[in-house]
Length: 246
Image 1 (cartoon, rainbow, N blue to C red):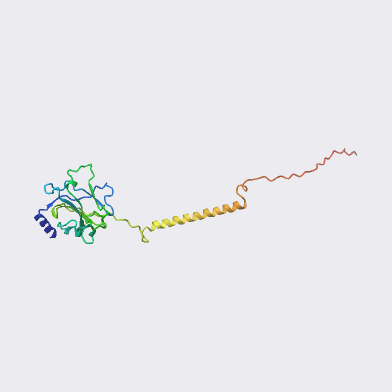
Image 2: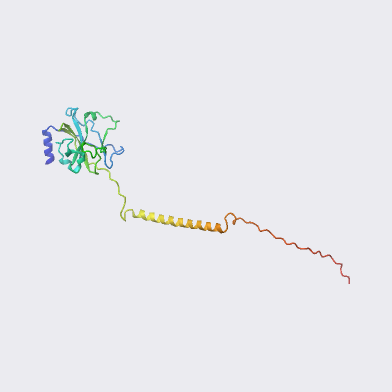
């Protein structure tokens, strides 16, 4: 009932419903979705020049996906209730990336990369003086976005809401006893085997050093013949005696 009522109010005020649906950039673009940002295609050729004036402000509305159905277009950019710094604790949506039709020329050059990175400004994330800061998104989401055209504070055109967008989350290392148990057991076994081998090598080294200390290596291993001692014998010559004559 509420969305229908909002639609009737929008029609009564001459709000143009644009069929364009914001989409994420192509999948081959690096950093398309991170832990605090995501990249959208620019809304080239999305708005009708007869409705949107050169001075019309085109805002990006970033909202909590669950709260997007209750979002009202009667917003005032720059007010604390629509500030990035109040999201999501005190507001379910905020406005950022103010642009005009000059920033989204038509037609689109197919060779040109035309994207918007949502959440890229870190310097103004805590500055209440910049309520339209394009600051890092505070949680993985999910989020929905749409483009809203305002003449002053009067809404004149809006796009459809995007499909839900969820950011990346860091993977937690396994902490439970069952998580990665096989991997831990393998590491313990390998560590034990390496410790035993190291102990054996150290024992062999100590034994080698002890052996070389008692019989210095480099000499004990070489055969040296002992000095031969020769005794001198006196040779007694035995002369032949005449044969005994009988």
